[in-house]
Length: 111
Image (cartoon, rainbow, N blue to C red; front, side, top):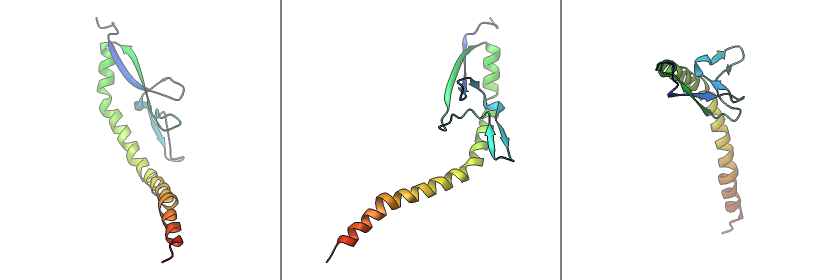
């Protein structure tokens, strides 16, 4: 029974469609980049599921705490840069699609 693949182990897929495990994610401080992080080019994650044995399933479930810790550390690391990007882009959108049109309307009003 221990060798029968009756369980479903879930992972992420890498850019090549291969199984990717966050346990192997690394950060290079000299280049400020992550590798083996399972993110696709568009910043999304894609699930990968495969049959597995009880022993393999147990190992996957046991590693969840470590994987969550790695993921949260990455979130903490990239959040300031992401917030800065959102701030700049949001300000540009508000100017382009809200403030500038209102300014044109106000400029055209003659009372």
